[in-house]
Amino acid sequence: MARRAAAMTALLVLLSACSAEVAGVYRDHLGTVAYDFRPEQRVYITVLDVTVAGDYATDGARIIVTGPQGTIVFERDEDRLIGPTGQVLLRAPNSRWSLKPSA
Image (tube, rainbow, N blue to C red; front, side):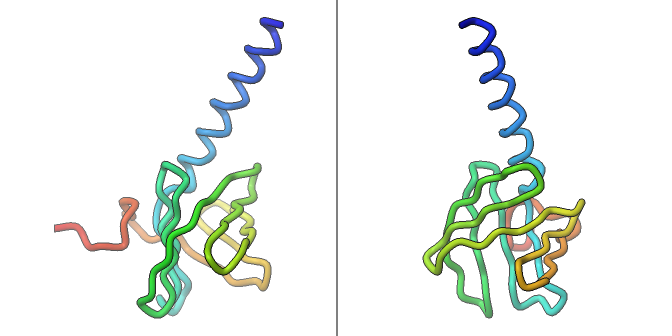
């Protein structure tokens, strides 16, 4: 039983570490779409200056985003997220978990 608890704890630590890695702002090449992933597994999705909130979870290289419009799954490839239609979001340089410019 102790071995199983230790294995579950290790798994949770690994999963939380994966979540932290995705935290940051990712944008499309036109700058019209942005996903602001926060460490607490919240995401703020902005399309054409309209922002909605959602949640995300990680499953290996997959990022599962659930928001008001439904669920979308991205594949993570280093600093890129690739959507189901081939949409590519690039991690914004020096992103600090916010779309708002730093002062």
